[in-house]
Length: 500
Image (cartoon, rainbow, N blue to C red):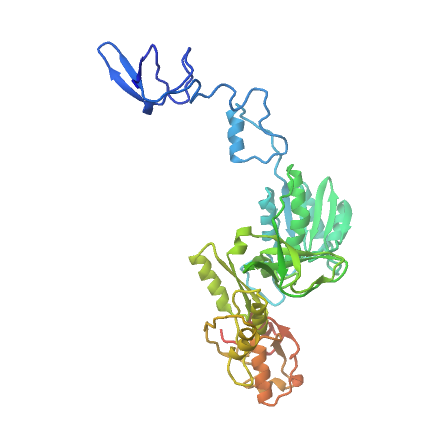
């Protein structure tokens, strides 16, 4: 067909994107779809592609009209929302003021990070952690100076903070010790509403109010502090900003170990989570209220209800995820013997393959092989000495895995030297295993099923030494680092472990 020719200035007009259409026009043809024709007295265009009426035209009111609601109340503003507000001609919008939160660390034993530590000192880092949690939800945070365990000093600091903060969190001092003053201070300054909640970690929480402001006593143990702040304070900060607390994703997983929980309190168990074959597994981490590393390593939280006494191994549980769900499918689950090289391996893996991670749980060599047997791990670290043959690992693997039709690959990872860990200078002159039965020597052991424990028992039997004669034989730790820490702190004179 022959292209239609239109005369510019009479039948067609040039317009730029965003310009209003000239009167009497109702369609736009893109410049790519026309051909310019120059004649003596005029310029024409040939239309190479037709355009129906109102094509490429934004009619008035297409996006917003004068009476239309741009955004509802209690809506968190996103980047696109700011564009819509400004695009409708609004230069100002009313918003909630960000909550102002003060965090007061208390305790005579506290010192700043980086300080020269003395026996009994505790590094104060809870205020950093709690402050970051509050900032995550939009609060403006003030970390107040540390205050010693002095009733009047703590009370005066709290009273001063109430002047220009919406919430004051007093960290530590919420229990029932002789220098735990938080509940009394809250009662003196205002109203004490709650002292103690049926949850663990985090039981000794204090909740109150003064001068129309919120007062919260947060336990001093770091895991208790983090969980109490997450469960009790963050929802309040969201509400003050007109928002609902977000719900974390959940996943069903088989718990890998039997867990015991006392009746009467909701327990929040930290777990690592990964997919092994078609099964999602959750492995419990160390449960102490002071073990902050358990929160660092945790992929999720399992809530054990207060009227339950725990879960059996293999039981399905609901895990509230602390990580992105896609991480579950990209996690290598390592369960078994503890070795610091596993942490180095995890770091190297994540550096080279950012989408991948290695999660390790230290349950001992035997526990690792049993985890492989149950299909709960991708790999297991093991250094089990077979007393019958004097060789490592192979006999156990044959009995526990290959005899059950489980195909495995045995890889040599690292060679290790084991010996007695002693304080610097070896003040008690410990040289051989017979020294362990001396009356002036205390020992710290590894848990049953650990390769180090198997080695110790083998050597004790070979040297005809009675374990019952060793002070501390029944005291158990789950990692080489924990044994070293016990020796370093003076809680034990020695322990068996790997050379650093």
